[in-house]
Amino acid sequence: MTLSSGSEMNRCFWCGNSKLMIDYHDKEWGVPLHNDKMLFEFLILEGAQAGLTWQTILNKRENYRRAFDNFDPNIISRYSFLKPIFVKRSIIIWRVTKDGANQKS
Image (cartoon, rainbow, N blue to C red):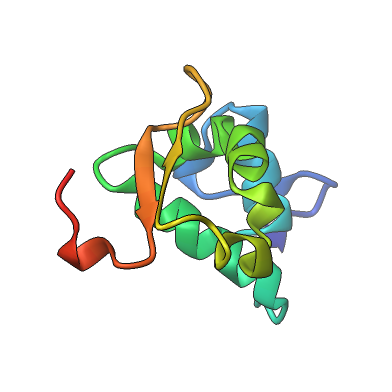
C-alpha cells in the first residue's frame, strides 16, 4: 500500500469498489499476524474458500465466527466426534471431524 500525493491510497485492482474488500485490503491484507486465534480463523476461512471468491468468504465471515465459536481452538477441539455445522444459509456447509480423513460423509 502506498499513499499518493493526495490522501487517496493506491489499492490493488482486486478490491474494486467493494467496501468490504477495500477494508480488508487496507487493514488486513499483507499485514503480518502473530495472534494464534486470528491465524486459526484464516486457516478455517482459507479452507472454506476452495473454489469460491475471497469476497464470498468475507461476506460470511461473521457467520463463520458464530458457527465456529469465534474460532476458539480450545472449544473446537472439544467438538463431538462429528459435529454438523449448519447455520441455514449463513455459511458454506461442511462438517468438522476429529478424524476427518477416516470418515465418510
